[in-house]
Length: 268
Image 1 (cartoon, helix red, strand yellow):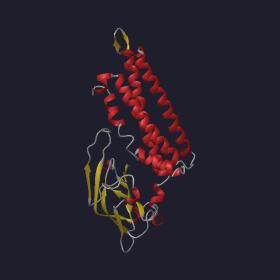
Image 2 (cartoon, rainbow, N blue to C red; image 1 turned 120 degrees about the vertical axis):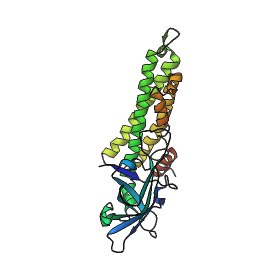
Image 3 (cartoon, one colour; image 1 turned 180 degrees about the vertical axis):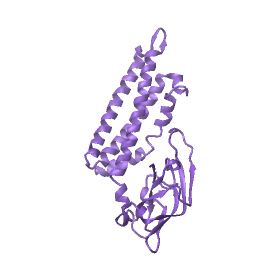
Image 4 (tube, helix red, strand yellow; image 1 turned 90 degrees about the vertical axis):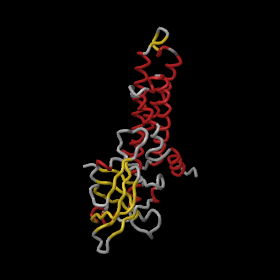
């Protein structure tokens, strides 16, 4: 069984408490009607359910007016449209529109106790895990780019010897190896907190910020090592570049991570 996240909306990115997709409970309390649109809803077109954040109370204060619901993708009233984007070609990213989509109340996450309790479910462990996922993806892309650049540098000969023997090249690769090791430590450090059920919003935000930003540096430097071949689609490097440029944006932008760090460490 496959699930898709329904979090962001056309006018809501990092400010998730401001979602406008509306969930209205029936008078008898047995069903919920959903209206609204979710954007960047990855894999909705191949999923069984959308794990959807909705505004469940028009009058309740911020953070106390949200719920999570499971919406079957084959329900009447759902329209799914593919969004084209640079990079991450494997990700089926979509817009999902809900027009009077009716689901049973049992599809509310947490049941009666979960109604209007969506924010506590999202803030903390859920977003921490998402940040770690994106951080791990960035680390993997950077590692693959470095592996390819190293192999290319040892095979590619110019002026009578492999280009890896030129200091201008091997220093670039040495710096990339050092940065990659630092990224790995940052990720594992944050993941240790999460694995041990310890508060880690600051640590996961630091990891997401540092690793995704540094991974961009690593991949772009590795592309330069390969020269023109780093831009040719016959090599994977061209794809690594397209994919890595999205990592500081996905799952919370770098500036959102800085906001999180500043708040959690009482810098503000």
